[in-house]
Length: 261
Ligand code: 13P
Image (cartoon, rainbow, N blue to C red):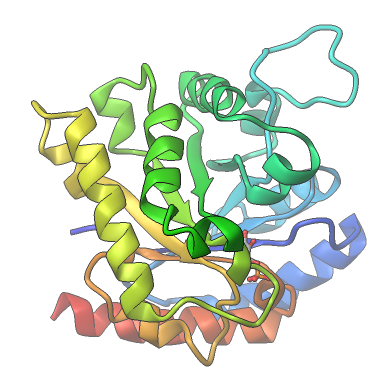
């Protein structure tokens, strides 16, 4: 059975001090929640402090990006080994904001995925269509292309450890979430696409966790968690408040309990 992952993508929010205060508040609120996994993805400058604060707890640490080289003259970049040393288990790769504002291509996403996996970091690969693509009826083609590119040269053993976040761009930060049924349908197609990439390894699509992301909040998470294909959420704005995100996690754990029973 796949354990749903609730990951908070803080984006460019919170200093180290603010992050430490968040974790002090958050951890006791989610202590003992069963049936889900929780990850916090702060900015690079707060990774160390959050990594220290969550050590020994059930909450995992994730980064928001990574470079594909291990070291060298790459001003401004951070390597997979550096993220591992900071305590990261996950790394978000190919978020639509990186694709849109920083020119990340499918090929760059794939290089980052391979580099992360080489250090046993688990990629959370973001895919999703824009509003224009959706209106042109291209959702399935766009998402399938992004998935195929991200998994290029990924060995089957590693592929099952990956996480995909289906984040339709029109739903990010807009308050306009996809419906549970819509997200479930696209996520089902993503799983089929991955299955086609690993025809000899049926365990890969079975193990692969696929999240929904885009205007997820405590009030709508149950709708996503009740869908059979959706394995948790990548949460932006609603992860910034510790009490609010803890509520979202608690609702998710309750929904996961209903799924499992
Ligand atoms: P919001 O939850 O703020 O819509 O952001 C979603 C997102 O981009 C998470 O990576």
